[in-house]
Length: 453
Ligand code: ADP
Ligand code: MG
Image 1: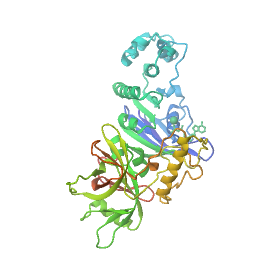
Image 2: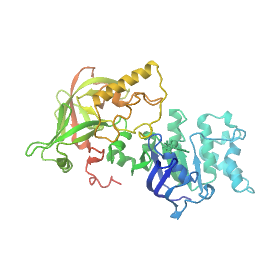
Image 3: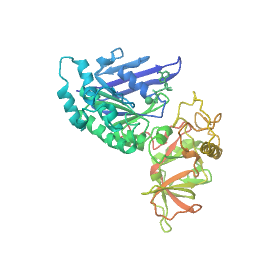
C-alpha cells in the first residue's frame, strides 16, 4: 500500500511573523522517493513533521490520497518515521523493539511472523535477541528501520537517518534504503542536507532555502538546469564556480562577458541562449562554470568549436588520488551566495568565539576572500558575516576563502605546479549565466523541456 502526498501553500511559524516554511506546494506521487534537500535550518524537518502530524499546519492544506488531512492524528496517517537519533527501547531486544508497534496496533495478534519476515528483509535475523547496547550504530539503525517497516506503513518519513553513521556504513545503508523502499513500493520522503545523498537516492529532489522551496526535479534536471544560483551552488561537487561578470554587447561588435581582467567572447553567430544576454548589456551577471565546463589546453591543442580561451595562474593543487582539483587565479571575482551552509541571514545565530590558531586562520582567510570578492551588491544579503567573521562551528574553510577563483578538475598527473600560467578552454555549451537576483538566464528556461520539470 502506498499513498500520494500533496502540500498546497503550506506555511508554518513558530514565532509570530517569521515563517520557517513559507507557502510550500509539492505533489508527491504514490511510491515515489522524494528527497527534501537544504542547508541546516531551511525548514526540512518542519515539513516532515507537518506531514507526520507532529506539528500543526498554520496555513495551507495537506492531502493524503487527495483527502484533506490537516487534522488527522499521527496514528491515523499510516506512516512511519525514522529519525537521525534512532530511539530504540534500551531494555528491549531487537525482536521486541520491532514488534512493539505491532503489539500496540493489534494486541491480540502474535507479532512474531511479521517481525521475522521484516528481519529477513533487513538481514538482521541474527540480531533479534540482542539488546541495543549489544549492537553497532548501523545495526541499531537497521533495527529502527525494521520497527518502521514491520507495520507496513503507506509512507516512510526519514529525517537524516544516516547522519550519525560513519561514511562507509552510510553508503551501505543508503543503498539498502533505496532498495528496500523500492521493493516495498512505499512513498518515501527523505530529509537530508547532504547533496550527494539526495542525488543518489531521490527519484526527485526538492531543494529548500530559508523555508522556501526553490526547485523540484530529478537529480539530473536540478543539476543540469538549476533555476537559480543557490540551487546551482548547493548541488554538485566540486561546487560550481560562480564569478561576477558584466555583459558587453556593443552594436555590431562581438558579444562578451567580462570576468575581472579577462573576457569570455561569445562566438558568432550567437546561439539562441546567448542572444538572450543582449538585454543584459552593461549589467552585472553571475557566470556559473561547473568544473566539467573548463579544461586545460595542452600545448598543441586548439580550441574546439564552442570553446573560448582564458588563462589562469595555478594557485593551489588539491590531490584527490584519482583526480586533481586545480585552483586557478583568473583575475575574476567570486560571487558569494548567502545561506549556502548556515542559518538564515535575517536571524543570525550568535556564534561562540574561539581563539585557537585554526579559527584565527579561518577568519583571516575569509576576510581575504571577502576583500578579493569585494562587496556583493548583486545578491540579496551582502556581507552576511560582517559583524562576526568567525565561521560557524565545525565549518571548514569555505571555497570562497581558498586561494583561486576557478576550480578545475583534471587528471592527477598533468605535472602542474604552483605559479604556472595555464591556458584554459571554456566550453560555452556548459555556461550558466544568472541575473542580478540570482535567477538563471542561460540556458534559457524554455530550452531542453524534457529536463525542466
Ligand atoms: P532543518 O530541518 O532544515 O534543519 P527545521 O525545520 O528543523 O530545519 O527548522 C527550521 C527553522 O525553524 C529553524 O530556524 C529552527 O530554528 C526553527 N525551529 C524549528 N523547530 C522550532 C521550534 N519548536 N520552536 C521554534 N523554532 C523552531
Ligand atoms: Mg532537520
